[in-house]
Image (tube, rainbow, N blue to C red; front, side):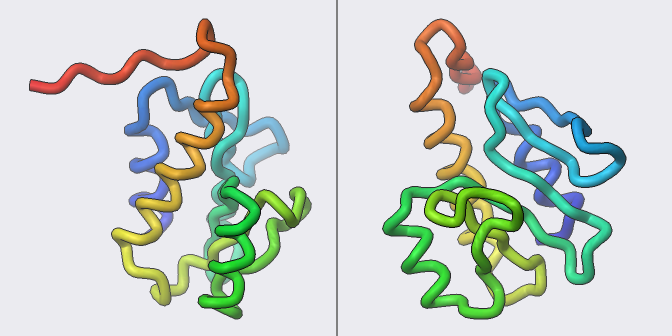
Length: 120
């Protein structure tokens, strides 16, 4: 996935919003006011930081050493920074984005949780 794909996937999730609270970079993706992804397009290679369960953080870092790094300026136990270097398959990165989103949504009070998008 490239940065446009990551941004598009983040924004396609119900209730997701893109903000720039730290200046022009990184793009911050939130749901219910809570961050689920940070996209640093200006880095080489570009990277996305995602919130995941601690056991998954450790497993991913071990499996993809050099591509999945400790969360940059984030809680290293709960966050990873994934380099968009082509090592992770698009489907796996998309699943990680969705997992981060789902984890954050589950932590929100019910009144702040987005309503699922209608399906045809």
